Length: 422
Image (cartoon, rainbow, N blue to C red; front, side, top):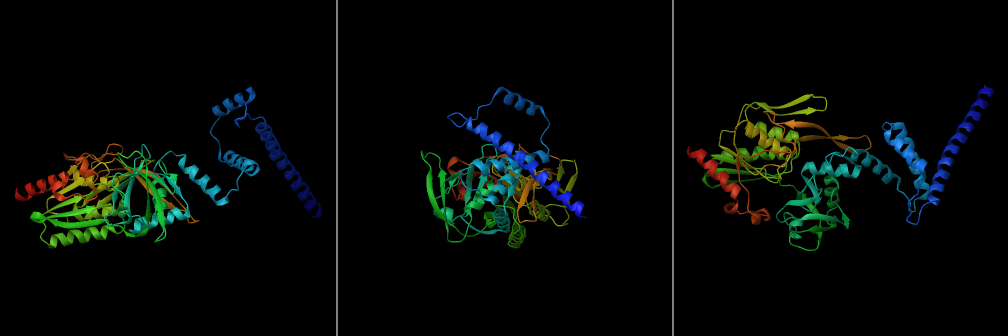
């Protein structure tokens, strides 16, 4: 026993010496290279360094073991040379975010515990923030306001539809994850957030300070138009939207609705389950949408409710109608259950899954493509309307578009009236 104990001690000491030798060699090697840096702080490479780098580029991709070793070495460099103190939590979050961002998928992201909490609040339909819908151009990374809530904090602060969000608290946000940017605009009730926006025809960015207030997201707006034509605006597909949608249709039917217009213009999408349940309320039993993952596995979502909408139907879409909005319009179009009117939609035909982790963080990954009932892949192309018609530039920038000046809505009313009187 004593002999084994002594042997263990000797082995441990040798291992420690060996490890310290490696780290020391790495330390002094890097110290020498840094000391040989030129006046601009650029490390000079000799010919053997360049040849070694070329050989590494030809080698196979790093294994996880090699990645871990390199991270340990990078931490040694940071601990040895970096001027400022490092927050260990921020250091770790940066590694996790970088890992997911290396997928080069704008829809996949890592959420810290605080960010994940904000995401959950966003789908519940109630939060504290500025009161505006925002969207992101995936090609440019530009984030812009697509709908400030009327009489909400953003509206009162003077933010307009089409304003580009340039900075939040003096930090540029173009190209940042949209969910992260939205979470930064949220916060405790009564606090403020400074936002710099770029507005068309303005030479310089405009800075505004917006007070955060409790915002109950108006995911459904409904009214009866002239000639007993019902109108339902869906601003987002959240958990609360399904019940609101059911009530809106029931109320309109009870009021004598003869035709229905459903407006998903500027609707960025939302929950797949929500849009499926809403389609089940108005379409006959059958396939509504299906997805395929990387293995070719297919998952189908069907309508099972025997009831369906019998009144003439029109659906309004535009270039900002995305994801769940396109599932909605695509199913209506494939079943010829209504007329799709407006402009070609955004073209986001991929599905993300939010995966909670045990430490309160989460990761969102693109896991599949979705297809309309007829098998259309609209990712990157969008839903083409049955009748194409655009709004005037003036009306595109208006927070509230009067019914009589809404060319797309007026076309939908015309189509519905033809159906009613046929």
